[in-house]
Length: 147
Image (cartoon, rainbow, N blue to C red; front, side, top):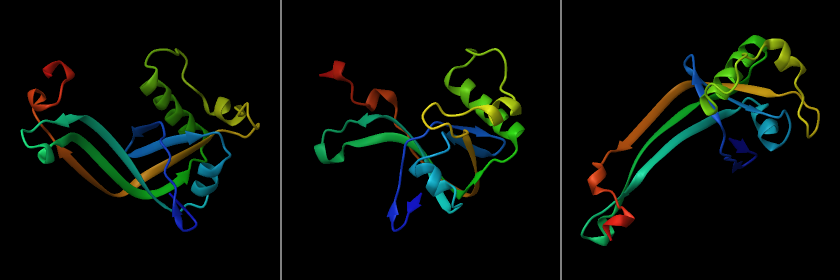
């Protein structure tokens, strides 16, 4: 995100659903302020697998995969779409913990305990994406037990 002339990056919980990234917030704060302007955003997903060993110290590397998604973050106005995305998000991080899916009515009525603002759900539909991976066999990754 861009806040004036400065970039603004913040780690977020997210879910990939129906070809878009969905994320949420409490409806206030810097993230909400920036996203509400519907400016272009870059969403990055990164997973590090470990440090790659090499006999030459300067050749050490990192095994990873990353995806960068470019698009606009649009606030979801349909309560049913927001509920479906939030339900997917909840199940991603706590699979099977809740038995009853969220409803549009629940999402419309839910308020933050911090400031009473309604929950915000944003959808980023990719305009373009890039991905990169540095795959390395696990036996070439640094392991403290190897020392």
